[in-house]
Image (tube, rainbow, N blue to C red):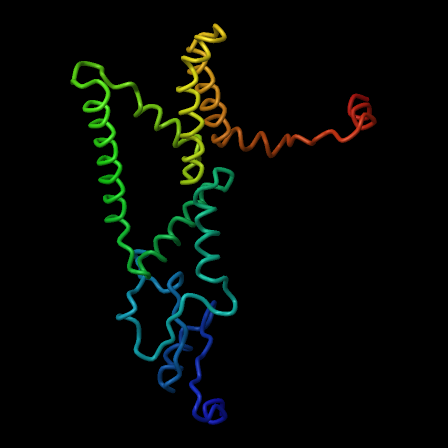
Length: 235
């Protein structure tokens, strides 16, 4: 009856969610396409079924009216995978869904990871080459000024965000560049720069731990808005 009422239009059966096993075969026998979504259509190994292996009579899409857009879904999953306050099981599930979306979109995750490592190593080698050819003019033991360790601290302060890494690099660069000037003009030891960097990294590392996250949730800090509120809390 529905097919007849559709006339020349195509009918798509919403066979998503918890439906009996006979629904999809019955729709296929009637020539009615069913939905295929990447975050639900995967094999027993968790690998998304490629589009060319889906049944010919199917409607493959990233989402329906019951789902977020693919961009919103990606952003939400990436947030859950990266946020240290998210439960570990939920973060692991988010990583699994992100991997399925990558597989469905044809993104080779292992190749991208290998490419990121190669580019990182190339940039590190370029920095070392500039240091040797443009600054020290020679290679000797322990010539490195420790930029590699500083980069680890910059990545930690930047919280794995490209924009955050840029601001963190400017912050650490300003500390290193101003250390000598402060010691010369004010008489403060340049070692204070290392102390400031260590304090920043220490606090960020402590806040990133699960124990610290639980403490902040159990004992939230409420700002004081008036003197009477201070007196109420003291009482």
